[in-house]
Length: 320
View 1: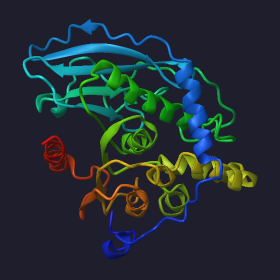
View 2: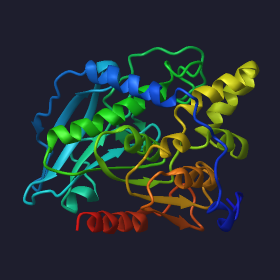
View 3: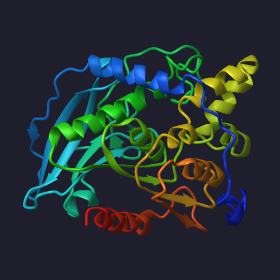
View 4: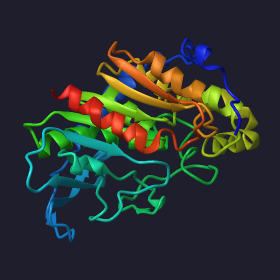
């Protein structure tokens, strides 16, 4: 894939044209209030993960409308963690198995890996969370489930689950600061968690999906954004209503409500999450302490292990 988007000097200054609807804040405050009121008890029994240096708990907590959501909570056995890293997952991935642990635990942090409801059959990572809510006509995939209204849209439930996951991280480790992270879809969800969650200390956002929907659908033909294109090709009369629904979930609008430090990454040959959409969210981010790493010759893999090391250093700096 060649450099198909704007040159870097223009990307750095780019501001998205996405505008939040007038009731954006009320929509999210009432959504979160209702789901927190419906919450039940969090269950976190310890499980045998086959590992000698990591303790794992199988977490079930209440997400949107009290629906059960699954997560793994890993802690290093012989080190007291200094923070909780809450991780959200890429498109169609799941939390995996109990022994699939990441560098976060090896670095001495507690790690909450959160399922995405209704997904979990891709990326070699099993999911365990269903989405019990129905959908009207949609294209295959998650992008158009319930898209005829903000109240019914799939990502209303996912983003609420994410905000509740931050609550649960505080519940599991009340003495520790909480950071959020994710790649691709996980990055878009982490933007929402930083904007909507309580007492988030910082966000590490890699090649985020779910940002600047009008721009993305006009410059890439790659899935998952192409799911929206196929839907609108069939439902030609619903273009305005569809983009109105999406505006409640656009990472650009959520970034304007994110008031925590952030480390982003972007790949300039990324045809799945085009760089101009990533910069749209980054430049809208509401906190001054923000930085973006760019990878000039990378696609959607982004910075890979190079970016992970930058994140480890960034998090260590935040914790002193």
